[in-house]
Amino acid sequence: MSSAQDPFYIVKEEIQDSIDKLQSTFHQWEDSASDPGEQVHLKKELLAGCESIEWQVDELDKAIGVASRDPSWYGIDDIELEKRRRWTSTARTQVSSMKKAVLSGGANGVGTMSASGMRRELMRLPNSHQAKSNQYAAAQDNDDFIQSESDRQLLLVKQQDEELDELSASVQRIGGVGLTIHDELVAQEKIIDELGTEMDSTSNRLDFVQKKVSMVMKKASAKGQIMMILFLIALFIVLFVLVFLT
Image (cartoon, rainbow, N blue to C red; front, top):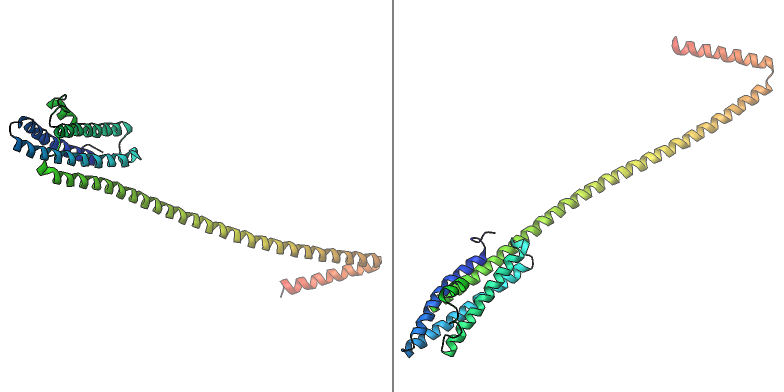
């Protein structure tokens, strides 16, 4: 995901733009020592800005926590996560230092950092008249970020469910083919068993006839055998004439 499309950088940019204005207010507060009324007004404005940025950084930390559960899912790596955590930590520290300086009535907490250094590290905090709008925008961006990732996960789950349904249908079709093959094999086995039974029965009958013929042949004399042969020949001729010549 590019920086222009990443909600983190969108929120960060808004915070950075707001910090620039808050720093300007902070310098005005430093220079207003001779005007107690103006200094009190600027103090309230600075404290409101600090509260706003602290809330925004906390929300940004929550979004980073969500992304850290599965960085590859969000298109980032551990190095990018560490950079984001370091940025929020630096922002929180600087805001806390500025807030303490305002509450203590001096700028000791932030005097050690130059204006350009603070600009590079924090990229500015919101002033009071933009606090609410920036706060709402940051919350909205975070919600959009989480919602978009939630929708993406739901879409992936739906695609996986569809693939599982297709796989289940394929398994059922294969199971149906297997059952059909089983039924065919059972039917063929039954036919083979019946054929074997018939063959056994026929074989027994042939054995019986052969035994009877053998017994008759043994009992009959040579003359009787000749007469039987002639009778069979005549019977064959009669049957041949009846079948082929009529």
